[in-house]
Image (cartoon, rainbow, N blue to C red; front, side, top):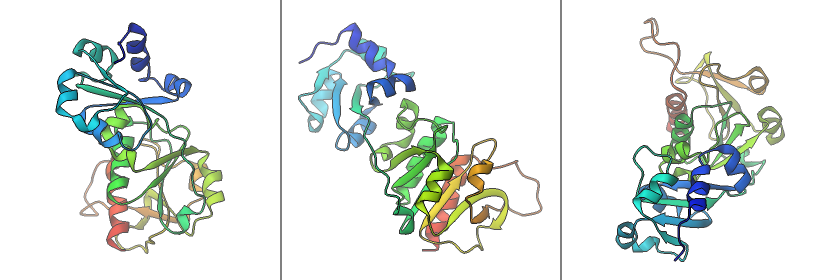
Length: 251
């Protein structure tokens, strides 16, 4: 079994940063649920765990398992309270089918910057059967530890693609492009399809003008009651959950 060196600890810890994930082509998952959910779906480089964890989880046994002390895991971890297991995986090469939005719903994220929001959005997409998300290059990295934690394993079932959103949406040529705005058609009464692209905008600025130019249907989630003063807008992840739920309820 491999011995954990200072270089290994530094390498795993370095995957907290996007530039190192890109350079190394790898990412990490921490915690029992996250590791067990992702283990069957990604190419494993190494699994570091306490001896107790390895004994309790024989189903995760692999030649790439490495016994680690809690001190080692603390040095590798991005969590305030380190877990008993950390897995390091290859970042997969995902290919987007340009015709996928003609037969299914695809989510598009325009500069979602909060890792927690992105992780929750991936989890919501998984819950509602959306398997592809296209993101602007300014959107948070889906392989950051905070995003991986927030997806609760859903990153295994949802493919996230980074691209130039306006040109990619045009190239995909979907039958419908829905955008969420503060002023648009009431989503409760609007005609919604079971295929096309749904765009969610940045937490503070909404959908940018270049991306908005691709929208064919502007949608709004109404507050209740309509004439009562409310907060300026909904959290991006909450807005995503409500929006996709409305689409699925009309299937």
